[in-house]
Every structure is written in structure tokens, then in C-alpha cells.
Image (cartoon, rainbow, N blue to C red; front, top):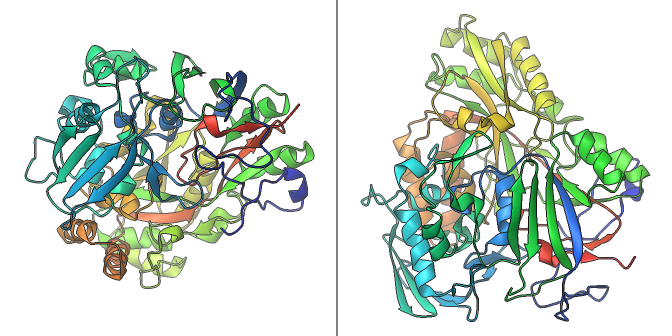
Length: 555
């Protein structure tokens, strides 16, 4: 994105054009303008930071979470072996101080940070790392939910399918050295470990609170007792999770910079208008997922808007298990029925780009050769006829009362897509589903839907985070079975960084575009709004935003 700056919204009234923010410096450093108390001096953090979220977390067990709002909270509590550079998104040391890779790419040896303790007082060491890796590998089917967990996307399989699994073993060499053995080279292994799903939990707490037994009812979903008692090494500890509020307290024994924030409050406010009002009145200090409708009001009130580089993709999902949707011509016709330019106009922030593949530009995978299904009503009509579409009703699922980085206004996006598809001759049946009624499961498991709105926000810096997560194995979301594509993805994951790997992922995007398992729609710009009291906020396209790095202005 070039030079980043931390801007007030007042300069932007004329257009919905946002500028990025200065990422907070790497841990252990400070900016010249910092007015921190407790950031580098060791004084006690006392400030309260209240942040409005668009939805409640679904669980506070990061390994089992699949939603942004859960991970927004767990990132404050838990840490992984690998962190994320705030400027480049490249992997950096975190709980691991360093690592080496064997020549064949199948063995990684990590040197761990010393003198780190979990929130329950247990030591962080090599045994703790192995306990977590072995927990993920042996996760029972009953704890896997819809099956779309990050562990499976990265490591391919669990212990009940060892011949398919990339993970082999974890060995504690000594107290602060640990060895991970893989079945094959996995070039995205280190970047993937920066994902919040691979945060390291206290082994004692995992056992004490029966992390893999999901018998506790929470907001209509089954979670484990551990999901209510997450125990990591991070700068904050869980104080309470009740209704629409999650409250965290600064960890008095944190090994790193503690910062200024002593209390974090996550307040769920599902309505964008209500989030804006809460910021204007001082009820909250900030909120994520600024919408187009917010911008002028934020500007008039002198509030800050911080932009992130686009690192998510919105798509129209197609369920090939629904009658007729397994016909390629039907899927091609749907793609030709969509005017992406009209869809983006007025519904997404400036800088949002049309998508014709699933990998953001940031990752350098060329889209020049992909099949681009431009808006072509005549071609669509011809293909619908060839597919034998007879006007059958097509249930179209979309979420309500939520805002996502890839979907700022779901009801309005659905309305425009539905209008376009209806104009093309499809008989669309709207199926609105409250996000809080487990929309994720409704579109990721088998069901009667033909179409659905969904997206993915990247959590680590690798193209496999997108194509591997979405299409690296058969899923009930798309009911798309393509052995040729799976083979291409498996091969690409084993290639070393360089032109051959880039070409392999380009070939993957080409294959996806010709088979149309879903229609990529947009790479949306996302942005936060903050009160003037915030002097620096650690923006990250990967959403790796940990609040001990917030700096407050002198008041």
C-alpha cells in the first residue's frame, strides 16, 4: 500500500476514500510520539478500551473457532509460536524465538522463548507445545463441528486418517527446544502457525476444562468448558463473558510489553448505525467494519478512520448437491448474470476491487489467464437454456444482522445480487438466516440451499490460506468433487517458495475459474473507526490486532 499514515477522517468528506494507519511498532519498540504509560516503563496499565463488535464470539477456544469475532478476542488471550510483522504480514518470532528447517522441508526445530508462563501459572515449554500439536491431531470427530477447521485445511487430516495427514509428530528435545516432523514438505507451515487457530493453550487447562468435550450450551451452540476458560500466555486474561459483553484484564505476568490498556471490553452491537452512534457518544472507543454510510458522519464528527489492505474475498457459493447445480453450464450462466461493477457501487468502500479469482493481489498469484465470466445477459440466457433450467425455485441463503470484512451490508448485497439473478431469469427464493442462529453451519453443511453469500478473511500470508481452505478438500458447502484440483493443491503446498510455486497456484486459480464451484465477487476494503483518544492502533490486514500495542493520546 506504500507509505502508511494515521489520518483523521475530517479530510475525507468529499469521497469514500480511506487512508491506512501506522501499524504499531514491533514489540519492544516505541514511536517517537508515544505517550504511553506502562508500555515500556513497567508501570501498571490502567486505561479501559471498549471496542464494538458486529457479532458475539462463538467460542473462545481458538482451535475450534471459525469466525473473526471469536479470534478477535482470543488473539488478546493466546499466542502462537509465530507472530505477524505489522507492516509486511511476514511471519516473525513470538513464543518461538527462532526456528530451522531441514533440507527436505519435513522437519522444523523451534527454540522457544524462556520465562513465559500461562495464565494459570503453568510454564510454557516444549512439552506444552507438543501437547497442543497432539491435541489438534487427535481432535475427536465430535469436536470438529462442520469440519472446516484450520487444522484440517493446513494439515489435511486428523489422526483417524493418518495416511492423508501432513503432521507426523512433535518431540520435546529439551525444555526449550521442540521438533515438528511432517510427512511432506509444507511450504506454508511457518506462515500458517501465525493463524490464531494455532495459539498455544495451557495443557493443564485443556485437561481440567475438558477442551474436546462440547457439552456446554452457549448462545444456542455447544462449546466446551475450556471455551469459557481460555488459558494462554497473552497480554490479557478473560475476566467474564456474559451476553453481549466480553471483559478482559491485563495479564500482570505478561512476558512482553504490557502497554497502557488495563481493561478491554468487547461490546456486541450488531447494527452498523448503532455502532456509529456508540462511538459518537463515547460509549465505545472504536469499532470495526466501517460501512459506506458511516464515512461522512465519522468525518463530520472528527473521528478517525483506519484502512486495511484488502485481504478477504466475498463470493457467491453454489451447492452442487442441489438439483441442477452440478451442471457446469448452469454455474457459468450464473456467473455471467452478475454485474460486479453495479454490485460494488455504493455498497463497498472505495478501493474495493472486483474479483475474478479467490487469491488477493497481495499474494502475487497472477489472474491474467483465469476464465473471466464478465457480465453478459445474452450469454447467460443461452447457457441457462442449454442447461435445461426450467424456472425451478432456487433457495438463496444470506446472513442478517451482521457485518463482516468481506460483507459490510449483507441484506443490501443480497438484494442487489437477487435483483440481477432474477433479471437473468432465475426463480430466487430468499432464505435470510440470522448470523447468531449459526449461519456458518447453515452454509457449510448439507442442506436445501442452491446459493449462498459467504467469504473468507485471510489469517496468514500464503495463497493456500485461500484456495486450500476453500477447495483443498471436499466440503459440503460446495459439494464440489474435483480430484484434479485436489492433486494440484497438494502438489503446490509441497513446493519451495519461488516461480514454480507461484505458477502452480496460478494453475490452481485457472482450474477453479473453469469449474466455477463459486463465483468470486470482490476483494473488499475494510476499515475501523476510532475515537480521537487513540493515538496509534496496530492495524493488520490479517486482523492480528493485539491491544497491548494501542497507544493513547495525552488528554
